[in-house]
Image (cartoon, rainbow, N blue to C red; front, side):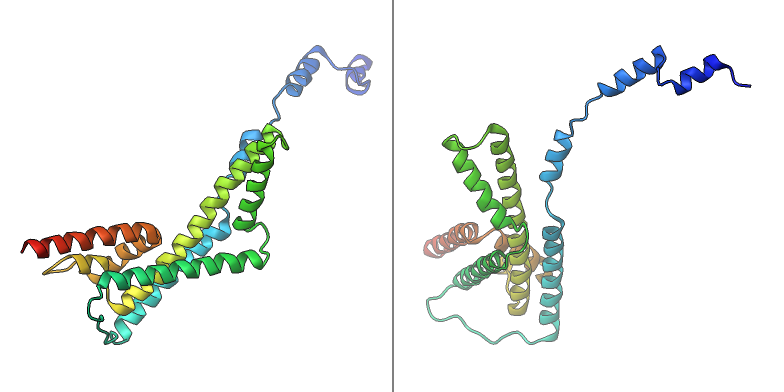
Length: 223
């Protein structure tokens, strides 16, 4: 037979001092997951990372296939034209393709696409500058803006790398080959390095090619 005093503690709903202390301590534990939510919100979307990996891999595979299984195009530069001009034209073409890609994905209404998120974040930040939003909303918009810009950068750089590697391999052209004499670095290595430069955009490439071209002209004049 059960002891009535023992049964009263378990069925009456009255807590012992130890149980009360445990309940109070548990109730005071922080439940704020703000830091975790911020970290999650700042993570790059898996879709963009997957796109980057596929674009780079496809570009390398296509480039190597074109290089080893097709003949090099028999082209000659026009009089007065520089090989760097051809490089710059290719870079401009790739940049325009990237712009069309962003436009197509944006108009295709892909859910939570980075360009749309960036646009909304900029609007929220602009509203906040005139007192239309609170500080917490502003901070969230700034975090979204940073994340969106990173995602667009990953998408465009990976696409540019893949396209430029394939084109350079097809033409068997590379930046290192253009600026070195004698024994050149292995062409596949040249294509990787050159494609990485292309991925940085036309502004950086233009600065680089301009400096190299001026240096060559200076050396020729001195000779």
